[in-house]
Image (cartoon, rainbow, N blue to C red):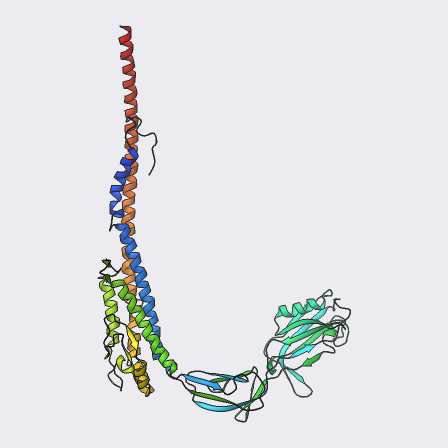
Length: 481
């Protein structure tokens, strides 16, 4: 609001015009600022938007937890162990068959490496020309090179390039090899090493020298002539006496679903064991219980009434929050029509109050009765059928499948949360539009009142001046008479 420091002079200086204008403007803005007014309504709606956004995230997490209980992988957990993990470590994917086999490692995978003859004097230019790096494999005796599918990389070397410059260009070309300069006292040597292990990751370095001779000990050719090379090797092992090979030290799917990784050459056989592991099933059920309790607790907190402080939760009495909670609680009451296990209680998921039989405790929370669950898992196929339905059934036969269907529907683009978001967005837009309308009216009133008081002040100042003049004239007349 504008301030009029001189306003009121014509009114005798005793009228607080700013306060009068402010009071009038504040009265117009009262629908915005009063308790329960538009400002508080917007803040309340924004808080509800945040609350339902949190519910949406928690329901999504619940759906993910249910999804893990519908996944085949989650029910085919396995654990793999090695009798000598320092020499051969092992991992297995869900669904891998229970098995046991022996592994012996003859050699580890290695990369190709080479070192050039010494160049003297050190740090002098090497010589102009081109270097070519090809990736492929060396086979036979004597060794013969077969290029792989990767394109050869050519590297330009200028007449002023030192060996360090050449190494930098090789590394910058990303040709499948790394280059390093070694100074051993006899001169500088170019050391190369392939970036990957295994026979197929070998390389061949060749030079095109500007002197026209490409394989002598002069110019750029010196980096090739007289080179000492250690060729790449695959890792070699035997599985139950059968020879196997790998470019790396990891033997993936040599045995279906199992990866064993060699770390040392072995002198004795290492036994690898793969067996069923139901611990992941229990972890997934516990994760489901935790996810459900999280969303249920958030809903309870938002709808509670504290008798001691006489304060209501943000959504106390909100019918849509009640609907959401009831929808999820009803989903827990789902009963399978077939199978040995019919409800959550039968697999050990019971109310925190211990009511069992699929009922829920007063606050709706769940717990996993480990003893009851372990008893049910004596028949893991029955527990699997409860959550997933029969293998030859539909996609909505098991408890977890049904619950996943409920959460997917709530989270759909036209579902519960999307509808709620649209409702709140609409309310906030209407609120903002009404606040804008009232503020505009208040601004116009402020401007109008300011103009009127300014005009009145000017008029009163003029009348006061006239009154003073007349009084002076009367005084003058009285003196003269």
